[in-house]
Length: 255
Figure 1 (cartoon, one colour):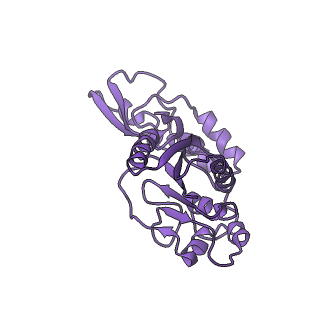
Figure 2: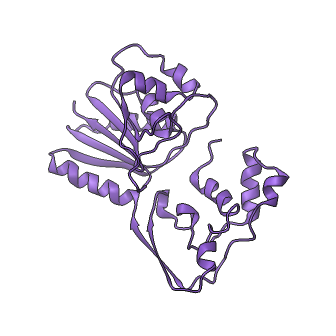
């Protein structure tokens, strides 16, 4: 329904007996939590729904989100957990050890090692994937130094209206074909190697200008980016990577 990760995890916390700090609240042992963030801004109570972090959200927030997206039912409300911890987790130390920002910083180092000028466009990419595609490609036109690697990190969303296969990065890559110019290559990937709902795991996709006529709007209308990109041979398969620091978009500008 297009909800962002903060909204999703607010609901998850209140449908769980361990999320929203409840895991830590149920032990008296000293806890050290090593956290890899896949959330924009590294808000620790949102990462993995904050298993060991005090929760600022309430069940009222969760109900409001469900109502907003037309998903609320009395039955769902009945299975919500008791209120999540709002304090009292002094025996917990939460340590951030990995994030999207760190990944982008490493990419800039690698680009410079290969004689490519890196630019980080944003570390807070969000919103509808097809809208983000247009904004990112248009931003890339303003950078004149070549070759350049333009980077964006974050996580977009897709409002699903069709019945096709795909994911947010595949949809972004497909939509980018409408705006990309010769000499540009875009790669959109989920760092956990699994982007959306597809017949086999897809990490994301790379794209240039389409080499043959393709009705991009048709595939976008049906949220079927996977099928379009598979026909073009543009899908990226890595398999599950075992970790997740959100999504990364790379635009290589060679001309």
